[in-house]
Every structure is written in C-alpha cells, then in structure tokens.
Image (tube, rainbow, N blue to C red; front, side):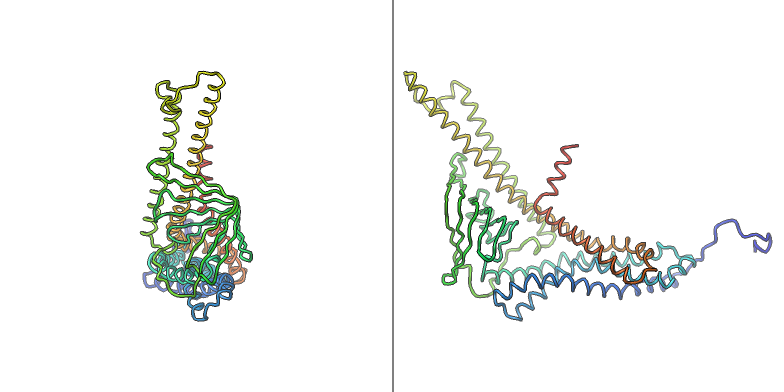
Length: 454
C-alpha cells in the first residue's frame, strides 16, 4: 500500500511472517526427521570404529587364553556399553552436520529464513533433542553402564585369573586383591620382566599402615601345576611399621633378591562371583562415597606425618634442653677422659643421626601411601565428572554443528562427514589424554603450580 501511495519502497524493516503453532510443529518435525537418519548412521559407524579397537585389544587375550567362542562373544557384547557412552555424542554431531547440511544444500534453510524462521528456530528442536539425549545418556551412565561394566569386569577378572600377569599394566596401579596393589613402570609380557616396581600389601582392607616394597626390577612367573604366581624382586627395600602405636618402631629391610608367592591365582575359567567394583563399575553415589574414603585415607596419612614431624621436633627440643638431654641421650654420664668423652659423643651423635634418618624414611614411606590414596581419589572423581561431561557434549555438538553445517553445506556430504570425523578425533584424543593426566594427578599439579606463581 505504501509503495502504491508514495511510489517508494517502505523504509522500515520487512515485516516477518507469523507462523502458527501447527506450522512450527511441522517444521520442527521435519528438522528432527532430517537429523534422525544421520544420527543412527553416525551412531553405527562410530560404534563400529570404536569396536575395532576393542577387537584388537582382546583378540590376543582370547587366543592366548583359549576362551570359548560364546564367552568371547559375550565379552564383546558387554564391551558395547562403554562404546555407546562415547559414540552417542559424536552421533549427535554427525546428525546435525549431515541433516542440517543437506537442508542447507537443498536451500530449505534459505527458504525458512526468507519466510521469517530464524536460525535460532532451526536450532531449538535440535537443541531440545540433544538435551533429551543428554538426560537419557546421563541416566544410562548412572544405572545401566555401571552394571554392564561390572559384568564385563567380572568376566575379564575370571579370565585373567588363568594368567594374572596379563592383568598387570604398566604406568598404573593394579589391584591384585583388596589387600594388595602393584605398580610397574614397564612390563614385558614375553619375558615377564617388570621395572620400577612398587607393591603395597595390607593386613586388611582399609589398613592405613600397609607394608610397602620397592624394587628396581623383577620378574613374574606362573606355576601351572600349583596354580600360583611368583614375583621375584631385585635390588629393593621393604618398609614396615611394626608397632602402630609407636612411630619409632619402624623397620626397613633392604634386599638383593626377594620372592613373593601368591597361591591359587591361575586356574581354569570359572565364575568367582566377584563383588568388589572398580571406578567404572560404580554409579554416581558409589563414586562419591569411594572418593570420600580415599580422602579420609589421605587425612589419616597427613595426621601420621604430622605426628612424625612433632616427634622429630620434640627430639630436637630435648637435645637443646640441659635438663631433658639425659632423657634423649641416656642417663649414663660422660667418661672423665677426653678421648673417651669424644668417642662417647660420637656414638650419641650417630644415634641421633640414625633417629633423624629413620623418621625421614618413614615420612617418605607415608608419602608413598598418600600418593596411592590420592591416585585412587582422582580416578573416582574423574569417573564421576565423566558421567556428566560426556552426555553434555551432545548439547555442545548440537550448538556447534548448525553453523558448521550451514557454512559447509555447498561442499557436499563428504566434507560434513570428514569434518565430523576430525572433530571426533580431536574430542577423543582430549578425552582419553585428559583422563590419563587427571588420573595421575598431573592436571591438579599444573593448576597448583600456576596458583603458586600467581
């Protein structure tokens, strides 16, 4: 009307068309339908790619142990539980890139924008669908995944009991039982050699003063006739606190060669009914409780170290006090002769140095125990946050996928798939690498160093 009256186009912005609820519902359904096919396609392809890694990881295990085909198939089926938790977020990215990319290539996105439908309106149903997947995947990580992984871990535990050496992995703590943990820096499966070995043995679960054995290198052998495993250690020492009420009663045994025997560890496959759970076999509540127990263990170690420091300070204070010095050095008086007095003082000094060295060694021993508790706490906390972080990646990928799809729509589906694979590789590398760094406490250490510099 304004053009007919004035002969000029309207100066204001072009009015947008108001879409009804039914029309918007049809648009939303069309967008979700366009993304549904690529979602299942991406889910299948990514799951298959991840399962190739699982196949390579277990093929040698099955061949060396002679596991029956049905049992091997069951193990591979249960391995899908962990694979689904990783493949679903990437399937969301593939769905957005391919689905929205195809709509943009067919100029449907352009037609919607020309009809008054904003890009946010296009994002809204896809973001809502990603949010529903996030909620469902979080529930899956809390209820389903721990149970399926527990079943898988029980089967692998029973399989590994045939050859327990294969269960020990380098650069990580391995719980051989609820009373024994072992750490090796390097391991040769062919020769059985292990390097930089640390073994922690407890009298009972939860023991705050376990026996710690360290060795430069060693070997692991199995005796098939007696179903036992022998760990032979070389060039090491064993730290043990005999009397827990008195920290002075501390024993260090240095050895050139020592053998540790473990009976009934190698046998034919049979279900053991294992009840203990690892970090990936726990739900959110169990992970929080387990991390709390490890933190209490660290607090107990800190209390012990503080007691050792107090004992050392008390010892040194008594040396400086003429009245209390005899209590430390002994009540025997010094010999009258100058030469004898010199020898007497040398003996007392050696006794004092031995006392200080013993307390220092015990402090290092407690630090090893504390590091073990801290490593386990980090593992529990990392797994706790992963149950939220991985599902939330669905929403992030949906928000990033739409502008990426619109930008690369003219390049074809090949570019969209290639871009999705590239993002998946980066995401997977950061996920695995970040988890390893966090488990070893390296991330916390870097953050602490940055905080100290500030």
